[in-house]
Image 1 (cartoon, rainbow over the protein chains, first blue to last red):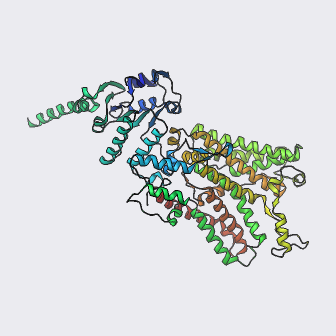
Image 2: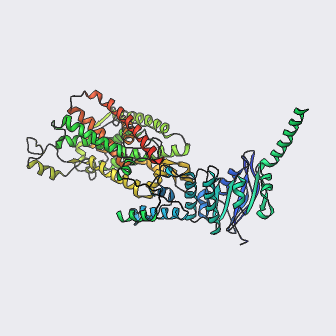
Image 3: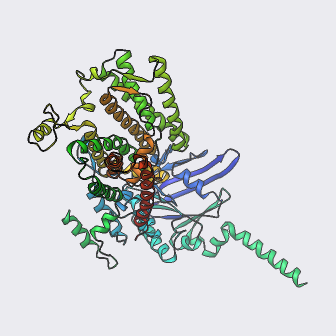
Length: 264
Length: 372
């Protein structure tokens, strides 16, 4: 279990003179959920894009299952089993559930030039997969636009898993969801991890991250503030370490100051 | 089919599952508007011009031929629109392809089949240029192909005048006779059937005993064939799914591995090739090429595609719808001659129809995506 699925060692990314990421290191193990926390502008998006092959890191190395690799495109990362579910989910709301599920990787039948998209098989797989996570796809040919936010999130995750993801990178999967839907999605993420996937959960919501995460990496202004195991970290401490923590303490002091001057 | 849908329904016993009637399912299809429009148009002309010969064999072939010409480019334009782009250079490409056939054949002594192949390779080149410019620069295809509209039309005119000294190239008819491939674009089909029907007195004859309508023009078969092919592509192939995905959400599609750029480039090649098929049909039918051929056809193709249910924003539409859009267009443009209505009103009708179609399609899209 100690073997890392993926290691990101000292990843740095510069855009011209801007240092977007500096020496970020993360290790992801099988069956573990690693939460990446950070405030807006902490470099979360840049990090995801670097992990998923959209950006090439300026410095640092990526090691997948013991082998050093360079991702030239998102496709490379995908081929090695690193699947990213972006905030926009890469779902087309005008297209059907099935067509979205198999977008870019359609099951085929037939021979040679007469190979066709096996719609029936695709429909069956899509509704079966969605059924497994407790979402009744009333009709797999219905447009994704008719689904709720949580359902869409689950569709995107289940699609990534179906296509052989070993490491799931989830970008703010709960940010746009209500309490109930968020808990449905989180439950599904835990289930995915227990089935042997490594998960990188990116969020700025400590209350969503803490219950499900095994370890936590905190990002602040492009730098990692370290990775902590859950047992070494209380929820309050985690909250405090988020970029907001110190700032809020400072703010409290300043407010007291103002309060005092007003009273005097 | 019925067995399968039953098994799905058994699997998901959801108390929130509302039974959706067949009618409702049909109402959500993009081609519904054009289909309904076609029926209305036929009812209208059936009443107004039913006894004028519009629906005789000859009259029917006439309006079908006009529909078919437009349909050939409208189907390709629909695929491109579903893929999220426009091609305004289609009309100019028709003129350009026409002289690409005529000048080598008449002035350079090429065999006709050779100049037809030359025209198609030029089409691939123009389509590829359009596509690569749109994909690489990220500029709206509206602008890129608008530029191509002027470039191609200008080049057609300038080159033709440079080489021939005028703007028309006649004299192709004699070359068609013995050409191995020209018949693909110019021959009438089912001639025997039409002669037989004529001999039975079912369809009208000329004085020499040959039927007035000699057969089904090749363009009609191209139109039907291309519609079937495009529908098959869209519904039944991987590439079809990629077209929807590229038009529906470019970034999303790319993130899951759809080669969006390649899809779009191939669709631009498709519209240019369709324009060349149109040009072949017209040039071989008329026996001459004209630099102004295909003028404004790009807009008519877009009208047909939009009436057929394509969204201007991409990701939604149908090839069958575009074919019906072209049918409405052809039927009205020819049918109006059989009525007392002044033909000047045709364009008013065209614009009005497009407005209604867009409003209707907007409503359909909302139905489909907002769970109603």
